[in-house]
Image (tube, rainbow, N blue to C red; front, side, top):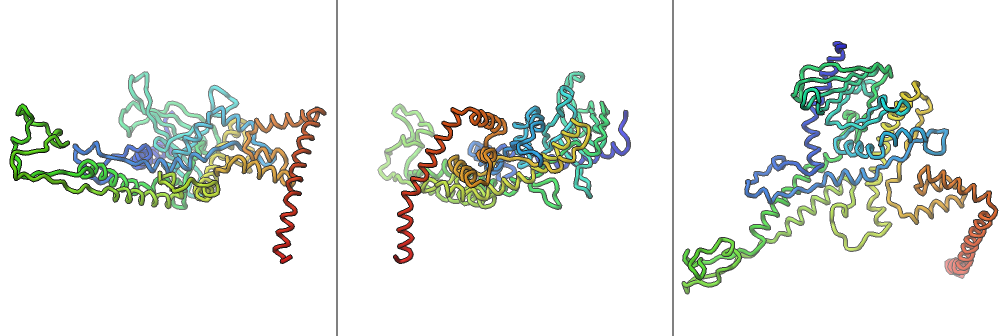
Length: 478
């Protein structure tokens, strides 16, 4: 079946958009990998000095410092106390524990990544969920609803029939998904052949963008590295200059006046190599008027100061603790100091979680639609569960949770959730708790432990009460 005129026009339009975006996305990819070329720095480096080039990979640091704190732990419906078991089964069946991290990295690097949902040929009960790179996929948004109106993925893989690389494409439309191929080896093929199509009649495109730092005029997001690229280039220039200066100016240069070529020979009269002369093999001369001297070595501290300055600028722009940038501190940071230092990066992670939550929830609604063949209105209130992006100590978390339990604010299951226990572990603990309550021996042991803990706490309080009373009396002037 051939493409309709409208499908053909949509395909061409998305293909042009993908081709237009790819050069900038490939440049961002090189910055994240730390392999950007020197031409991008505006440096005219002679071939003899290529070995002195130093590239500092601050863009990756800025991305990873946020991505490392984005751990999705489940989805919960308003009628449930714990994460939905079926949605989490689909999540793990598709390997999204690992794949979601790749999607988050690409979203932070490129400003967006994509998640597709489709039929799983190997498992009718588990829809296929895959994450896609913006280097291969692009979407078109409806200007009114801001939802995906069409999507295109173009990729290359070996074609056993052709005996070489083939170019393939998948066109996603609201009611149909079309698979295409071409025999052309050009990265921009002009003729596509339809291989297959699936009339799914979903009424929406089964592609969901994960958007980073979206804005009203930039609905497909902005790279987190955009702010630091120019400062990274500046630091690379300074470090490259430092390498050259270290070679030619860090070691004090010597000079000599009044010597001839015949003085630079060994005992047998053979000419000395340049490196022996450079490292001080000549210490005397026949001419009594010969003068030896030494220039002052260059101070390279200015390079250290300028690189440190660039690091401080990046830390201020991205809210990253300066110690992440390799800056030494006089004293090890305290627990309170760490929390204050990481306040901005933690808030940034919470904002990312909110933005990504909506996308993952749309993915789960598509999953349930393909599995049940109907839209579930309850999923409109689906909640995404994330791990706390902050770095509290285990003792602090436990102490806070226990105090909330003692105050009657939280039940025991909520305490386990606050402490970061997984749903499986919470179920296991609940079974153990019920077994303990049913067994009189275990219950007696538990009561004895609780009573002794309470007595100890009361005893400690009673020992503190006289001091507190004395302090209060002193404050009152008694």
